[in-house]
Image (cartoon, rainbow over all chains, first blue to last red; front, side, top):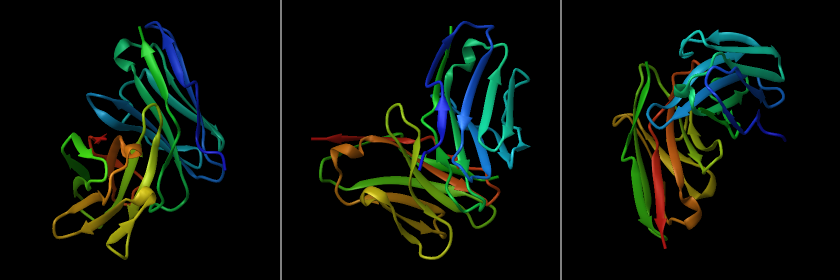
Length: 114
Length: 112
């Protein structure tokens, strides 16, 4: 089975530009999570969805960040405008219906804002 | 809210030696506990999980962990380290609300 697929794997852009990260969850999974990983703060949950509906976005750092899930097989995380402090690895993960199931992670997008 | 403390940000072991990674958690309800491994430039891969039942949990690649409620611990062990075990390891806890809290991670180096 295909795992969680993220694109692009690497993104380098200048500050002020819009950045869009993409994620395709595992088919049949009801939950989708966006995380950010940095050396300073470790792994942080940004937002998660259940059946395409955002449930908790308390981890989104500020209004420059937004996430959508228009259907069960696609989600985006957008940063506009981007800043150098947004540089990090962004992971998408998906999970089945039960809360005792593990989350399955994509390989991440390494974002560098110059 | 739940939280995880991983003791030791870096562990170095000889090939063939015991690997022991420590994890302590706090949770207001019976927790679900997970260990993940991350290889360079990859996502997190599940090693093992504890939800209910047997407190000694066996995972992939010869790893196992024991849930000790009295000590609020979930330490990860492997009897004999292999070079391929060099990676970063994360302990995580959930209170059943679908949200995971991760520890800071422990980087394992294996010496030949």
